[in-house]
Length: 157
Image 1 (cartoon, rainbow, N blue to C red):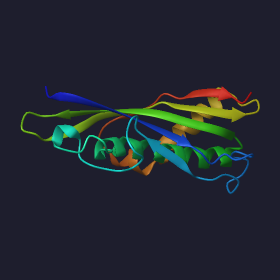
Image 2 (cartoon, rainbow, N blue to C red):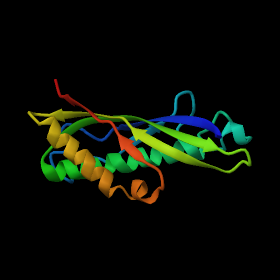
Image 3 (tube, one colour):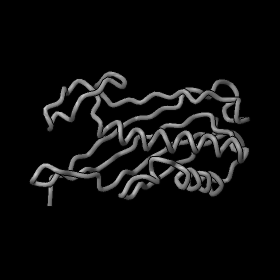
Image 4 (cartoon, one colour):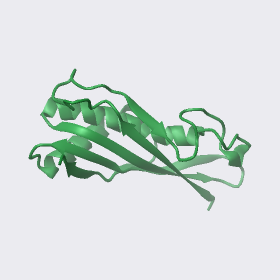
């Protein structure tokens, strides 16, 4: 078995404004991709592959891309379904195996979206929106490994 590498990214939607997802055009799609201790979106190779350790790696950005894709589909579908989202954060994790010959592949990615909704929204309804977002995400549909999601729903105070 090859060596496993784990990656974590923090994607935060910053576009809720005062109205959240009250309508498809009511919210901004702005969000931030962060990896602890590194500048935003400056890239290099993984340090294990001789990259600059002060910059983001393609592997982290790949995990971020899966998270971002889910975020954007979730917001779209929430707006269509009348689910008002006022905050969304995801600390996604990915695992990559590198074989002894140097080739490698991701073995799984897990999304951990923490979503804050406005109003009395049933958690089952939010889970259904997550499932539909997963089914629609272009990037998740394009990979050959499992992309899991473990959502947590909060209600706006």
